[in-house]
Amino acid sequence: MRNDAPRAVTAICKALAEQIEHGLLPPGGKLPAERKLSEVFDTTRITLREALVQLEAQGLIYREERRGWFASPPRVLYNLLGRSHFNAIVSGQGRKPSTDLLSARLQPASAYICGLLDLPALSSVVQIRRARRIDGRLVLYVEHYLNPALFPGILELDLSGSLTELYAAHYKIHYGRVRFEMLPTALQTEAAAALRVSQGSPALHIVRTNRDQDGRLIDCDLEYWRHDAIHVSVEVID
Image 1 (tube, rainbow, N blue to C red):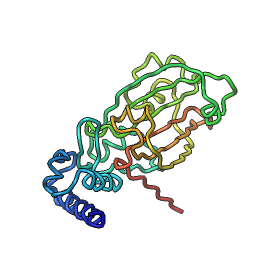
Image 2 (image 1 turned 45 degrees about the vertical axis):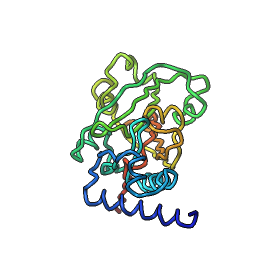
Image 3 (image 1 turned 90 degrees about the vertical axis):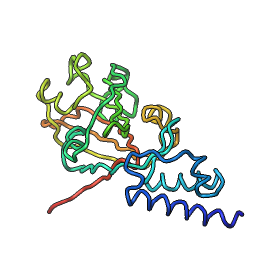
């Protein structure tokens, strides 16, 4: 039985992948309950769960806490050199963006944030926490940290839309040079709760540090993307 398990996992993965590829399990469509799938494939819940986890790692399916498994929608293309923002990127690909504002406040900056924004010790920063959706699906948890000296009164404004557009309209600030750092990670408590997934789920962590048109460090974003929701693209032209 132990020797048969790997073959069973491979067979289940192949069968479900084919169903997704041919549209029988449409993007965003809910898979049958694990119990039902175990009966369909005549296997144990342990073997089935291993197959589902492998498909999740491949980005073909995803899981939501207390809701079950779903076929993953197409990934959104994220061009790091495009100098665009979430709403424009998603809308430009025929998808619907939306944002949940989780919190916004002035708080002491951690040593890490002080380093990113080149702030002195014991500085304050504006922290804005948001969860972002594509076609209603939670895909991104982000913490924005702003230098408060450059954005007076920002906590009184509508922070559920594009910060890029808000900066330009209210402060005449436009993005200039941008620095990105990326690494795969496992979601910790706060990000996992915001995205309604299990703690430890795979994710792509992007740290974005932004300067304005005058070269000033203005803010940084700590982004946590569901790993199956994003396709990072960079094209360098001589």
